[in-house]
Length: 470
Image (cartoon, rainbow, N blue to C red):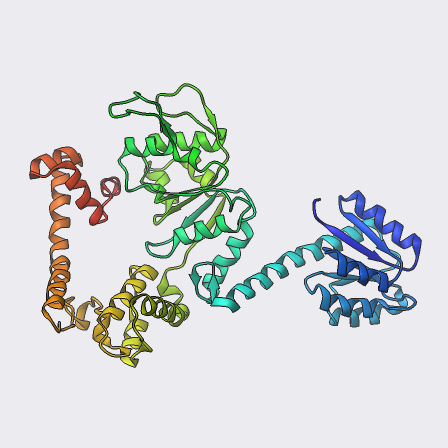
């Protein structure tokens, strides 16, 4: 094993050398010390993963060594060696922080079992120390904000997976922060000095997506006036993030599967495969497992992507983080806009606490940004939030009353957008249905240019492929 340094402390040479042979046979690097004092001097010079110390030693006892280690390197587990006559004392040592004890005489199997368990505990302890440090500094992790047990589970999974090259699949509703997770994984990985490349799989047409991902050679298709390097190659040595991967076609899925298997790409129109070294992180707001039996997502690709799953909880399931998130966004936007906003009025806070946040954290961020702009006092009022409520709570029209002509224009624009959106959505969906979901024909029939029709689809967040499968 690499970087597993064990320090053995015992005044008996036969014990020291016996432990050295047992542990080195298992692949550990072992140093020995004949006294507690020398051992502690070494620990101030070097970092060790584990210490095994005799309890009864002349000069400094094992108990004293244990207490000193808990000050010098508290994350290092300590295993106590003891004779049968001092087992009670060994138990006392465990109360003072020792991981376990080994009673003499012992077998190699007993030693290796306890050592591996102690190292597993150390990994968890280091993770928790790191996590507490992050939480203590800004109540979150990287650009995340939150302390709830639901979001801490996500932090732990990021810490676990980041040092590896395993493929990660991030799932969660829109607005939960899937790209933040992908960036956190990259930033805590060994690839952090290399590129992080993000691709939105819904923003590009099928042929353009393949060209973006794999690249193309000059003249390979109409419009290919020069050779283009694909994003797989741009991300070489780093991380490629494919957002909303459920939207790629079966043809592109097959090519992506081959890339993950072969670790090489062939540009469109090219003949020679190009090797790549990337870490793939994918994200989706859909359940890919349910798309497999529908025939819209390849089962073999799903299993390739789902090696390490990370599921992001919606904001309604982590309401304990709401005050922290509100405080964070208030501070952010108050500073950006030069406002001095102290907080929210009680009825405004109560309204947010009862709200379900269909748009999750992204929606909360937009609400607070708007409220900071609209607030006339140093406390945000209920009407400043402009929540679109349902049922008896409201009609969906903003309760805010404009104070000047510019605010009136902006309020009218917002209300107009809200009113028009359902009509626009029905307009494009009906046009697509009449034309068998062909975008070009739908645009022609409605008298729109194809790029404008596509822009309207994007604005309304309509995926033609998803609608066809519904």
